[in-house]
Image (tube, rainbow, N blue to C red; front, side):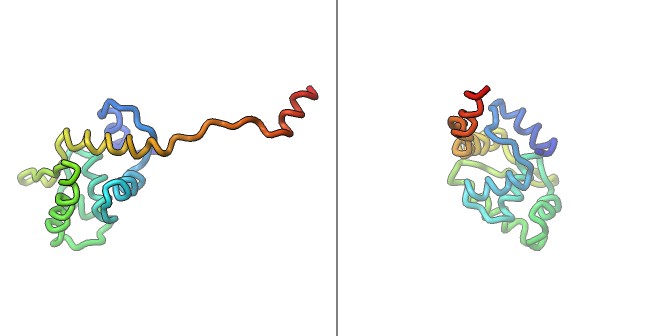
Length: 137
């Protein structure tokens, strides 16, 4: 069951999501899709599900696997990886970091394309035994 913030993000994007996911699942999909490290994916998922995040909040989102003093370095690395996709992380003076609307939409569209591979296959014909039972009735 996705968290409230993920639901709000999906509703605001004006596209029907192929799959619902919580923040951890979103982080995993971002890691696979954008070739990010675990901490980077967790931080990007945090940025996607809120308006902005302080360095402390991003540190908590990354499960404290990095030191607080290395946050700016990790953000710089994440910005370089996302630049390939024209996705920008903005520094908000005395607030922290955030994603612009255009960047959120780009990520969302990439996720929709990624999720297209997870469409469940249609049900096949019933098993032979079920067909025989229906004929006997």
